[in-house]
Image 1: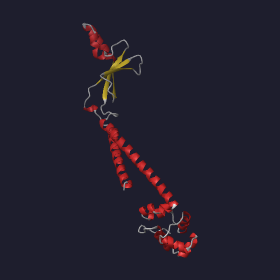
Image 2 (image 1 turned 90 degrees about the horizontal axis):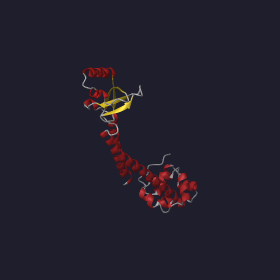
Image 3 (image 1 turned 45 degrees about the vertical axis):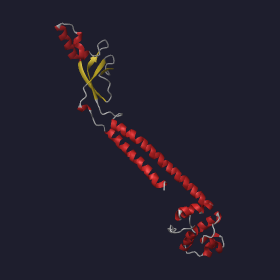
Image 4 (image 1 turned 60 degrees about the vertical axis):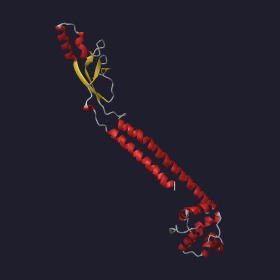
Length: 250
C-alpha cells in the first residue's frame, strides 16, 4: 500500500501515526512489531520524544516506509532542524546535498560551455571564415616546357621579333598547343600560380585567376548550419543558467 500524501503533516510522529492508521494497525500491534513499549510509541507519535536510529529503522520497516518517504513528506525546515538528530536522516540529507551540488555543478558547467561556444561558432558561419563563399576560377591555356616563360600563352608575342612570318608561325604554334583547363577553388592563390602537369610531369601549367563576379559567390549550407548551431547553443546556455536559478537559488 502506497504511503499517503502527508504534506499537511508537520511532524514525524503525526506522519507515522497516519501511516499506522492507514494500515489499520493498533498502537499495541505496531509497538509489538517495532519491539518497544506502547507507552513509548505513544510518546513518539505525539512528538514527545525522538527515536534512536535503531528504533527509527524498525519503526519504518514495520510501516513499510523509507527515509526518502519521510524526508519528502515532511516540511524541509522541520526535517533539517529537528530530524537530523537521527543518523539515517542526516546521512540521507548529506547524500542529497552532495547529489544536488553535483547536479548544479554539471548544469552550470554545460551552460557555460554552451555559451562560450555559441558566439565563436555563430561567427564562423556568419563570416564564412572557415567555409568561404567566394569561389575563384583559374584557367590554364596549355602546357609549358621547363625552359619557357610561365606566362607563355599571355605574352608569346613579346618573344617574336618584328618579322611577320615568325609572328604567324608562333601564333600557329600557340594555337596548336592550346589546351584550356579550368579549376575552381575556395582559396585565393593570387593572380596566377604554376603547377606540374598531372599527365606529363615534365611539363607545367600556369593558372590565371579570372575576374570575380556574382556567379563566383555561392551559398554554402554549412555556414547557415553553423549559425543555427551557434544560436541554439546560446539559447541552451541561457536556459541552463535560468534553470539553475529556478532550481537551486530559492
